[in-house]
Length: 189
Image 1: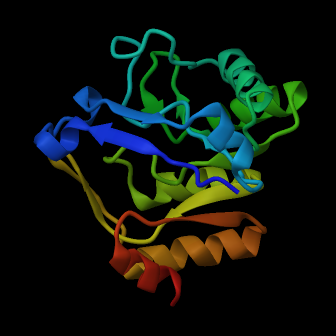
Image 2: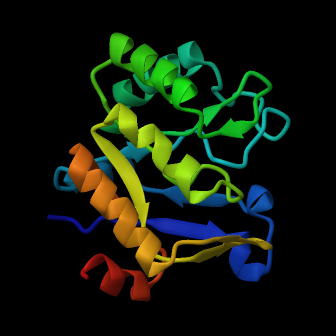
């Protein structure tokens, strides 16, 4: 079987610290795609920090998110990672916004809806946990603290344990987000 080759280039390596200006291009030939074993594709179409000014096609409303999820499933996605916005388009961890988006997506397409527990980098622990009350099939569990540009996404070990406990109690499957090797050890605790 031929080996699939993946080519990625990023200006981050050359020093672009602002994530919004870092292009990441990955190309995999059609024959290489066909040679791959089955895989799960998760689409994270809406980041926590993006705005419509940066990305005019950013899906914000529940109907836009549902249409985007449907297009992603048609392209092969199995999981739709969900961030939501308030009516002004700003990131929010509002339970009502998550409920409306989840309902719109589930009414339109059969896909696993995975909630973020990250929200915006400034969100506190309580607001990051609140949407889990809706019992999504999956949610993210970042297993350590990460620097994003000039900001810090804080996830202490006690916080990671609390998030994991909440997910287990609610029947939510965690997706362990691992950004560096030390986070593997945390996930294995």
